[in-house]
Image (cartoon, rainbow, N blue to C red; front, side, top):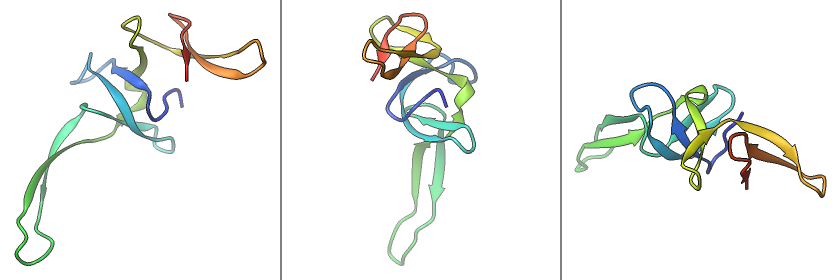
Length: 103
């Protein structure tokens, strides 16, 4: 998967196109990611116990990982991810457009 938990990403297609957010969780099995502030849905929760009230909760739902690109906050641009080796021989993730190394 090209995105990891904690990456800053930009949505490139769909209703939330152009939004930038942080990846909250990744599901490699289904190829979906949950991004902060993206794909918000309203969920109505029933009361679980006597005396408890029901709630209306707004939360993020997963979107396809193909709909997001890693976003550079320094250059303000979205880019694909490539893999490169440092001088010490360590493999690192790097943005193709900017050359920025992802930590």
